[in-house]
Length: 483
Image: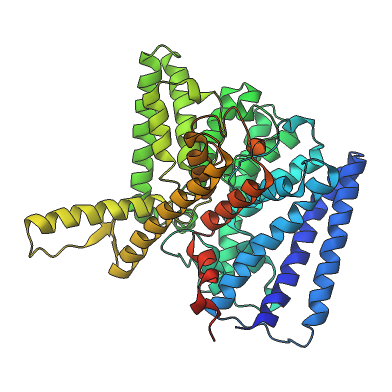
């Protein structure tokens, strides 16, 4: 393990985070937000001091080389350091009541969870709210992926880094060079972001609302600079734009690259995409009928509200347009089910991922077939792709560890003396990077109800959920640190 290379790269990434923070710093300056401006300047100073100390300590390290272990260490500590520094403006400005809450808020942003400790969001300076939503956007496609795309001058081969940060059981290499893949993904991400921003501007929103909503939508993250989330805008047009782009953010971005290459048939035959669309359509129609027949709304409004919350839940975005906790229990249970699914592999969404659910369904079907026909030779196919035995075992292991983490997390959070539903959904929405849940947490109440120790636990759950468990958990094993 080459710790000097690890820390040297982390110093570069810290400076990179500092450059990004200059954007909200400029907004604070132009809007005469004195306290926020000071908070950003203090943050920039601390980043500069940290990076300088590390660079001096590692100045003899000329070539940055990595093993697989080093890549896991870099990716995990990149997200931790980004959050540690990213939280400082919230803490220095007094936006949060303590650093634990600031760290939670920032981890929620970068991991695209969308959970919040803030009670009155709208009372805060727009520069801080802009940075808050900007963390959503940066985390959506990945901090390390962006770093690899923009800063190849650091002399790092980013294959292992991108692989350790990417979500899903399979990794798509879109171009021969990993830097090209990173640039392609971020190029598509940026193009969709610009398109949504323009469409929201055409819907009557100002630049600040249009940009911040786009950050929360394309990042599948859910931060909105309004207390009432998307419901604050009272605009069906804005809601449908969000539905469309949330759905797009929840799909595998590699498919968009294939569309640009005119490989339309390959996209249409993608097994994960098919199931993703089927889940969204079926669940939306079921909830629509349940709301309409229960007399909540007319059919058109029921369809819009149902589609919005279904897409918001399955993509783990966490936007809301209504108080769905008063919906019929059938509709609430369908939304609760979506919390266990998540978006597609290679998307901005969190959760277990559609392809893993599909694979487990296929494995169960094959197991049933072999019970009836013991000599049958079965394969696990998702669309036109065959899932290897190693990948299937890895997926089964992931889901097992995911469930165990959710259960252990719930047990630990139960020490807070909150009710079971609050503890369980709070744990699940942080682990799945969802942001909203069933019950009081994430709907009528924020995470402000929890004391600092529990906020750190929730922050850890968000981190392991975003980096898909094993990248982080491997750091806690003896084999990882063995020579």
